[in-house]
Image 1 (cartoon, rainbow, N blue to C red):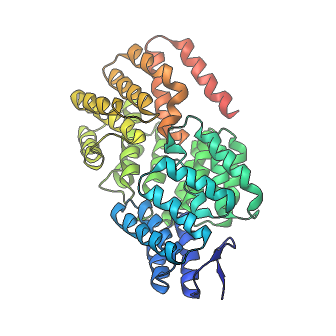
Image 2: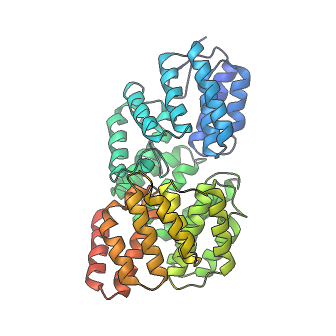
Amino acid sequence: MAHADSRDLSLSTTSPDAAQAYRDGVDLLLSTWPGAVETLQRAVAADPDFALARAALARAYATRAQVAEARACIADAVATAARNGTPRECSHVAALSLAINGQGQAALQQALAHLDDWPRDVVIFGLPMGAFGLFAFSGMADHDQARVDLCERHAGRFAADDWWFLTYRGWSHTENGAVARGRDLTRRGLDLRPANANAVHALAHGMVEDGASHEADALIAGWLPGYDRAGLLHGHLAWHQALAALEAGDADRALAIHDHSIRAEASQGTALNIVTDTVSLLWRLRAAGHPVPADAWARARDHAEAKFPAAGHAFVDVHLGLVLAAAGAGDAAADRIAAIEGGTGAAAPVVAAICRAALAFVDGDYAGCARRLAPMAADVARIGGSGAQRALIHDMLLQALMRSGEAGKAQALLDARLRRHH
């Protein structure tokens, strides 16, 4: 009996149990919902020769930052596909293998070529998407537009009620400045599958970009209690709540959320989210003039350096620069900057400039901070992440300009931000 995935692409397995577990596991994976690994393990157990199940399991391990397990599993998938995989399955496994083994640029090219032939292969479509996807971490300055272009190129191939595609098509438009359109698409995706952490996250982004942080706060407050703390986005969604609290002037609530859900001792998210969310929240509190406990900075620094001891990941390196500057570790920051400048990535000059600007900001050299950041403002997107995450850098420049007596330039920066979304 022939089997197909949730979007009618054929599957090589002859096991109905393996096919159903694969469909269920992929849905859990695509909605960042707990249980994906366990469900996909059942698919592999039901049919050990089912290459796509092994590949999806590898992807699920990778999203949980279980690197060794992911690489072992994708190696098995490659070998299995070579024996009995269809052309689509072999191409699918090849894209995931490149991504899981850290070959981002090659993975992006393989994924895009694959989607030209099989655009509804959503496990592969997911690779370039999102704030931490292959486009975002490519070093491109225009990756927000690239995601929109990819979605619109293939929109006609998806059903009107495809919850996953609605979610990411909407998120892509939101990040690219078409906020009203993005919110509408994402809301439709969430309505179709409420148990979808990615849709709540994307809709919250739309609300924030629309100047409605209170709406994002309310959305998450109503939805988060039904999401297990083991869910990978639990801590990050709480981070959005903490930002809303800070915007409302409630620093005590923001710190309480940090302590309860965001810091390393409380969150079950990945190190990438924990480090960047913790550092960015503490930095925003400090920049707004609120006291931050000294031990919070020390813990954040220790965790960040333990998880990312070497430079080379642009988004992480920015946050390492921030935490080292705030912790008064100028020598360690200088060493990190030197390592960044020795790299070859397109984002390296931007990252180094941001780190130097952070040191100047902490030292009260606001003119020096602005002088380093201003030339890089148009290229900040190269570091990856979302607009909400990168707003910290633009806010640092804005504050530096205001504190150094450049009110006119600060107003021009604000006006440009408003024009982007209205």
